[in-house]
Image (cartoon, rainbow over all chains, first blue to last red; front, side, top):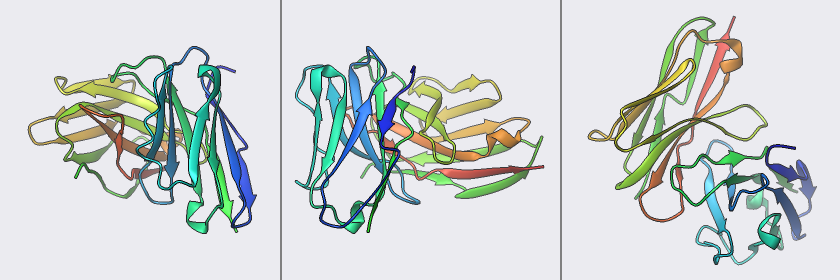
Length: 115
Length: 112
């Protein structure tokens, strides 16, 4: 596939459970971003990976949220002890280089619902 | 505080008509301003990217303008089509840091 791939597309889980969301960026893209989109709100930055540099975690809302990027490619976003306010669409994006004027290519997101 | 505000929140137009969406921002200094189209249930797709020195950029029937002095941008859609029905998101990239600032979007519905 040529685009950013995210899985699962939908996830329903009970409050208190842990969830893992996966992102496969476009091959060769060195930059990877995670965002959260709540209903009626603008996208909220969560975390940014660039090559082998330390990630920018400044957007993670609490220590229940963490993310990894293995081998500079696939990334997983983990939410521990989920709360109802974590319900949202989680979007992943990648871009080819570090350049500020590069477009970000988004996946279709994971819609997370916490019961 | 860095903010991006879009208007209107939603808009309904007839197929074939033109429309203009507005974006006001307070992000300063900024590196670029972007417009994205997001179809329901899909991720955003880039329409235009303008640096602070650019005034206008076109992509087919979409034309974005930027006035860095008044901190305003607009997205003009010409000869609208049913497939233009989507949310249009204005995004500003600050000069420093990695956090893009997203507007809440304008929901456009084109009806026949």
